[in-house]
Length: 135
Image (cartoon, rainbow, N blue to C red; front, top):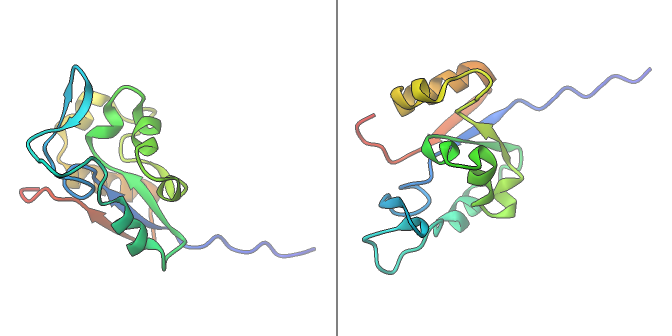
């Protein structure tokens, strides 16, 4: 009988897109989701920076936070906007339709959304990458 290797402790980056991954002026328009008012910038322009920052930590996972996971297509659509490297690290979002109603989720502050997810997942360590100064 062989002993099973214990699972590695979970370490999570809670990732917001608007601000950390590109300027925060992203809106839903008739043409889809567009980055407005920032000439010379593009959506997800900072993905390579996050890839480089996480490269020394292959066991760190990503949980998506906030509104992108509420768009049509949900978590899967939001995760698909990241590089394949970062997608492979994604394990879910702070919004869990099985446990939370959308209207309630939208009324809760982002820090509280993250803290509720921390309570649910119980990671050994976590950090939120977010630009929201008032929360």
